[in-house]
Image (cartoon, rainbow, N blue to C red; front, side, top):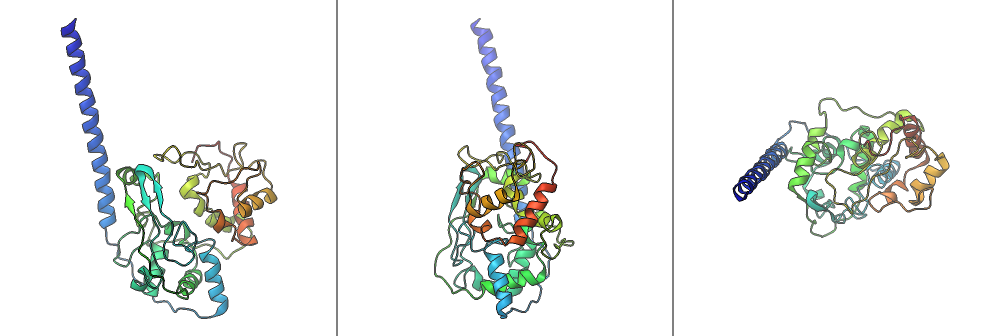
Length: 304
């Protein structure tokens, strides 16, 4: 009996060893692919743009920078561009939007390089950005990106060190499986970027605005736990017209939630939801996104 038990234990031990080794090889392989992708230098020309000084253009840039492309949101680069708040996401990594004011990274980039950064998700050395959702906003027309760059250049320099940006092994693996977008440039078709139509309160415009929701709510916008996220992390809600989503919502309910951060049932949205930025959307943008969400097929919660 003891001899048999010994054999069983040896067999189990060997199996566990194989699983551990196999898991290590799997993790190492995908981490290596992630690292190689981050090292890739993309050949994308730096455009020549003319910085605007027209008050109307600067106001457009201010609006976009605090709403659709919320550079000045606290989770991004902060109201003064000196850096956002640090967001720890367990073993996935620790994320902080850097100081991009004129005393930070903003000083290192030309206007054309900033334009390319927004449109193509590329740093000035031609390598991919990490975590900044250029792939969700690069559909903005040239005039809008120029307006953003022009407005950001009007903000004063702020002397402040950038916070940590550290990608964990799990984050690298999840990126490679498209569960969480960290390596941004590889998600962009650099030779064919589809630009959005002029702003109208329609689903066709809302489709592009909806790209901003996919990073958390999933490509189907039906929500569910983010794979690999720590258990205390907020679970994105279902945005489709399903009973587990927005079926019972009217536009007024949606607009109130969007503007106040309080759901129809009276519960507050989790701080992870960028309610402060969404509150700055104008009526055309909110109605367009609502029209798009209502046009989606109803999907049960959790389909992401």
